[in-house]
Length: 162
Image 1: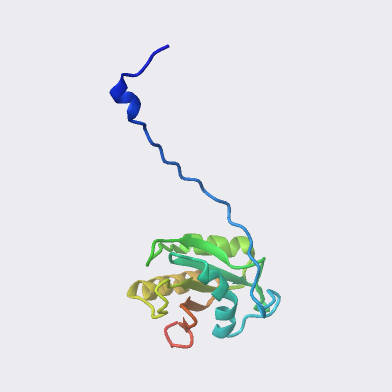
Image 2: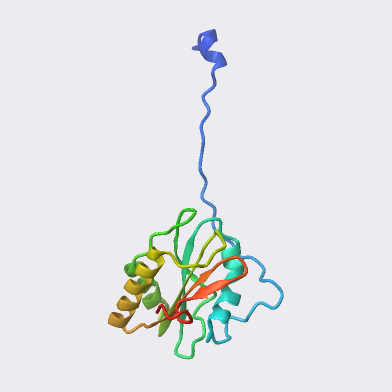
């Protein structure tokens, strides 16, 4: 049996592990809209997305894939990316890959601002322009981009930025 010298026996190596946790479901709040309800207004997007955005500690970007009747396809929003505290990398390839797989007739883009202020950043504007152009090429129109803050939102369509 090999024994460590006394000075080494006292020093213990500490290892750290990182475990990835599978996301689970959560109960919707009282009065939460049914997913079969058509999403027609930016307020509908905010009401639908606020519980998702409230659970995020970093910026996250989702799409709402819509059928031809403006009803959400699937169980909820499709997460495209999760970023760091105040940014996330969004690429048209991932956005429209998810839209095509869902069989979307149109999409609504949405992301949260953990700061609570839904004012769009210059990067938000550039990404939105790129995604609108990509949607035109693929014939999957971007209906809106809604930024969710704490209790408030900004709609690119309402603000004339789309």
